Amino acid sequence: MKNTTPPYGHLVKRSRKTVWLALLLLAALAAVFLISMNLGAVKLTPAQVIHTLFGGGDAREHLILFKLRLPRIVIAVLIGGGLAVSGAIMQGLTRNPLAEPGILGINAGAGLAILIYAAYFPVVTLGTAFMMPLFALAGAMLTAVLIYSLAFRRSEGLSPTSLVLNGIGIAAGVSAAMIVISVRLTPEKYQSVYIWLAGSISGTTWDYVLALLPWILVLLPYVFYKSRVLNVLSLGDKTALGLGANLEKDRFGLLAAAVCLAAACVASGGSISFVGLIGPHLARRLVGPNYKHLLPVSALLGALLVLIGDTIGRSVMHTGEVPTGIVVAVIGAPYFLYLLAKAKA
Image (cartoon, rainbow, N blue to C red; front, side, top):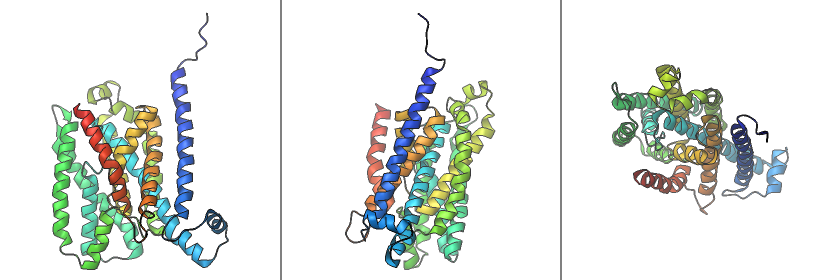
């Protein structure tokens, strides 16, 4: 009997599965997006939200929706997608399933640079929005170079275990430096920086969205384009060289993209950990290890996670709110411990 199965049929089937999964995640993201516009200290009905979005509504509804909620919702989506893709890149480059910007100390390095900016430079709204990513990038890059140089051995290459251990150690040292610098802050600045470090995106304006958006629009397409290269690099240095990869050039470009994504997201939303761990892990379970499918699904899962965390954080309490970073940490810490226990088993 003639075989009617098309060549590479399993790849076509997996691609279709990825498309359907991406559409399902987009629908879930849209649903949470709409729910998030309704919830908050002041409740808006779905009818009020839709009416206001299409030009109706009174001044109060316009203020709540367009000035307070929409910038915050949009930046939550951008931050979640950026951090998840950054974590996926780091896991591929280091071949370590526990690698992500928060655990490796990249977020801490970016946070230290932001703290120095807050301590020694005047705070201006537009200047803060557009200068903070640059300061965060400098801190994240220096931290990444330090961690990479300590973990790299000429005879063995990059050690995944050493990378994580060095990252945790450097993150602890950077956190201590942040405590020392915070002593120099005025009480008002210290309070705002402390809230920011907890991962709060409260008070986000469209300036912060516009400051983060170019990083996302430039870096995500570049990373998606390099998905095949990332597949090769994740197989190990010897295999990658055998397949013709330009090892150092490709690794540096992807690592720089991961650090830039993490730094820009930290500058806009504070230290939100575990997104770069959970998003890629769940994506790998759903679509497999091929980065062509894994990267976009990771971005959608990360965006969904941060948006859900922010929605819960600002609606769970009658007065005040819980920072998004804390809500995500409550979700992510048990998952991290589960992965750690599974790795030891």
